[in-house]
Length: 438
Image (cartoon, rainbow, N blue to C red; front, side):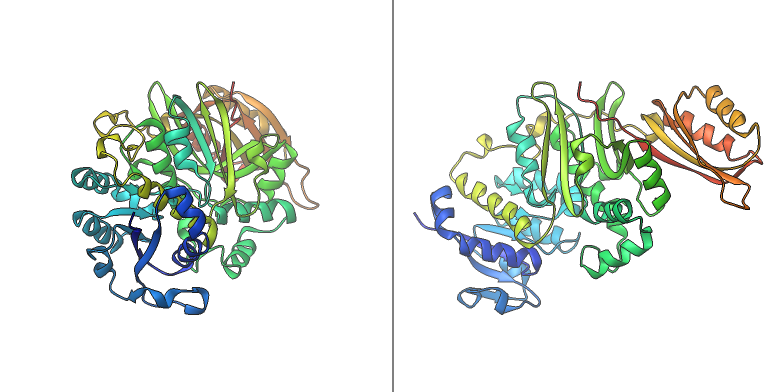
């Protein structure tokens, strides 16, 4: 049987890793796929040949559209990232009857509905395992391994940069800005770190996870997104003192009112396994009705971890080249005509518990005023931690944990608390999830 020809768009970190893994493990891949897989054409503006043994044996140009339309190419692998020209290239490849593999979470989150519809019309596949959590096979796990289950909720540490920053703040008592600079120096964060620290990258990935978990269209614009730049080392330390850790989580849950879709810093009990995922590692916790909770852990980025997922997708596509398109695994786990229009909940409708930190004048009656406002808003307090004021300072930090309450009621209570003359500055609010799997 003739080998499958692959066209590679991008020879950067992931593209180079994909080239090397395919070549290095060629014999093992043939045994798994049933036929050879070879890269015959690649496009890159610049690349380092010394990192890519064997690159001289293939055609390399700077024309990505030539790869996408090359009649000899069976599978186009898009690894250039971003929205454009990636979208145009992928649609061009599909229009030319090519199967597509991509690691581009932004592309899938924003344009996946259009791309999958085009692929359905042409009878080709679009595979995107590497778009979420790097080398962790979470897409396949939910879409295929958990296909018998009704997913109840899932949550994940799906951005390694944010997790590295919060880990360093906790372990070494460092400030956010200080750790961010180190993350940039180490290559964990970009020169413009906005997508990582403000939750946009995680929101792209959560959009994809929610769609395959619940069978809903991709809806990136409905994700509530909050970053970690406002988290202080004091918050991290107080959370630890109360038995919790702060993680930047993507969280989605099916409720009677609709689907929760949110990314934000979250306190979780330190005894949970996912609370102990540190550094740049990723993890996704899925709670389903039949199997219960399952946790998936591993490298969420990097050249060869991500290439592992890309090459696995190439093998999957190769195995199904001769399969009737109607019998392939659907892109979003559910048959296209069976996707649901379940509404995405507004953040004010969400119910969760909260961590509150406020700076109050150190005098009698202040705490009573705050607890009265919380009680009038229907909020019950689970724990209070009042720190001693520093010498010569008449302001004292007060930390509270609440029971579960609707976001709209918490917003109203915070607004009232901030009007008190004895409360200085803004109230810090961090959501809290117990992640019970009962």
